[in-house]
Image (tube, rainbow, N blue to C red; front, side, top):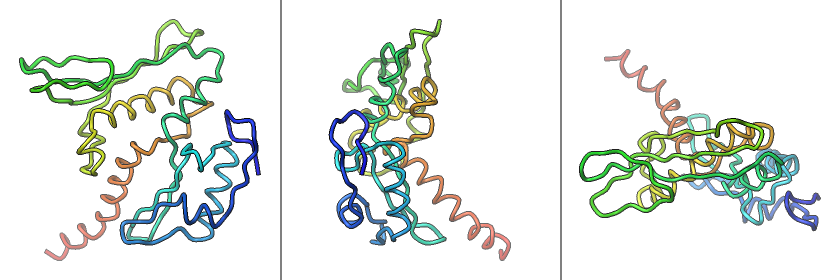
Length: 207
C-alpha cells in the first residue's frame, strides 16, 4: 500500500488483479509468474507508480530462455516526474519530415501533410538552471518495428519516443531509469535479434 506519485489517496496493489488486469501476456499466451508479479509490484512501490491509471505496465515477450516480463512506463508519467523539478521550464517536440521537394524539416506536433513522409522525431527540454536546452532528434527506422501502433500512428509514436529520450537526459534523477512503452518495441526487437543470433551462428557453422 502506498500513495502514488501526484495523487492524494493511497492504493493497495492486489497480486491477482495485477496478474489478471495489468500484466500483458506474451505473444504465445504465457502469463507472468509469481516472481514476475512480485518484482513488478515492488517496482511500482519504489517509483510510486499507479498501474491502475496506466502510469506503468507489465509487458510480456517470448525469448529463447522462455517468457520474460518487463516494467515500462507511460510518457505521461515521465512528464509528471520531470515537472516536480523546480528547474523544469517546458518541453517542445515534433516530427522530422521529408517534404515533397526533398528537404528535411522539423515540425512541432505530429501533423504530416499528403505527399510528405515522417523520418524521425525531435524534442527539446528547457531547464531554468541551464544555458542551453536539452535536444535530440531520433530516426523513425530505429524505433519502428512493424507493430500495429507503429504502422497506424508512427508520427504520434515517434514523438513520444523523442520526448522520453530527452526527458531522461534533462532529468536523470527523476526519470533516468524509465523507458516508455513505445520505446519498448525497439528493445523487444533487439532482444529477439539477440535470441536468434546463436541459432543463426550455429546454422552457419553447419553450412
